[in-house]
Amino acid sequence: MQAFVYHSVVRENGVIEIPHVPLRKGQKIEVIILPEDGEGAELMAASESSLRFWDNPVDDEVWNDV
Image 1 (tube, helix red, strand yellow):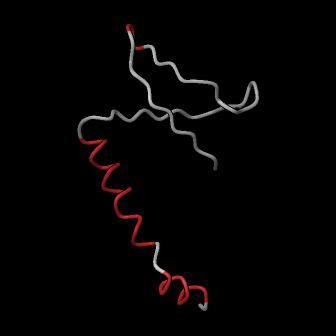
Image 2 (tube, helix red, strand yellow; image 1 turned 90 degrees about the vertical axis):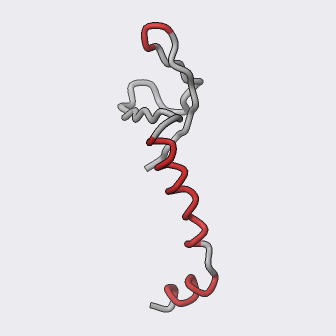
């Protein structure tokens, strides 16, 4: 699955604009909106901060031999 991340500001009447999306015309998409302030941002930051765990050459070597 390919994901695109865009940051936008909600305008009058709840309008959100995003730049050109590199997908074909008529392709169905799913849009998930995460506010940058509040609980959603904290949860996202926590999930991204723990990615260093996976960047471990010893672990990579062990799992590659399994």
